[in-house]
Image 1 (cartoon, rainbow, N blue to C red):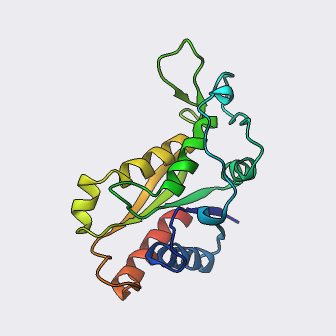
Image 2: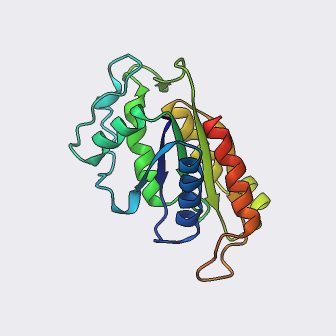
Image 3: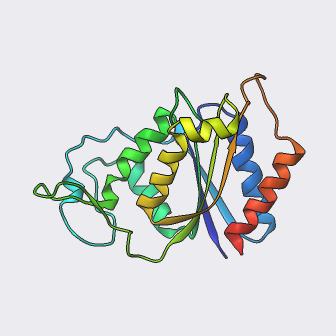
Amino acid sequence: MIKILAINGSYREDGFTDQTVDALARALETAGAETETIYLRGYPIEFCLNCRACTQQPGAAPEECVHHDGMRELINKIEQADCYILAAPTNMGSVTALFKRFMERLVVYAYWPWDMNGPQYRKERTPKKKAILVSSCAAPGILGRWFFGTNKQLKMTAKIIGAEIVGTLFTGMIAKEQQPKLSERMRSKIEALAGKLVC
């Protein structure tokens, strides 16, 4: 059975991002996959110290962080999953601070000794897993994708953990209602995207 891990960086319980990720998870389970969703708003992750202790040894496997928190378990879940849903709404032109904190802790996937100018990602030469990116913004969707950093940061996250992006769901104009709901058109898109992970 395909194991799919969704990592949700939304602040709002049952907000638009939660609804989208939940609908994707249901569609994937209907198609025979096993899904698990991590809500970063309730997950015990400390801020990265930028000590780079985890980046000094070569190898394809992620290294150990000096923090002893929930990120160790989450890295194990990332490693065991076959596919991913990476989700964060746009806040101030970027992914949420919750998602950024998680993203920075993915430095365990980098080999970056002190005498090297930039990092090498440990998963660059491993077989790629699949990922779907989910985001939203108050601006029209196409403008949000071009002018905000959210999509770029979600793509970087996929690259770091060794995933190939097979679909993106970036929804615009969602700030006109306090509790926006998924439209039937959106649900159809979700069904189509789910098929890209389980095929």
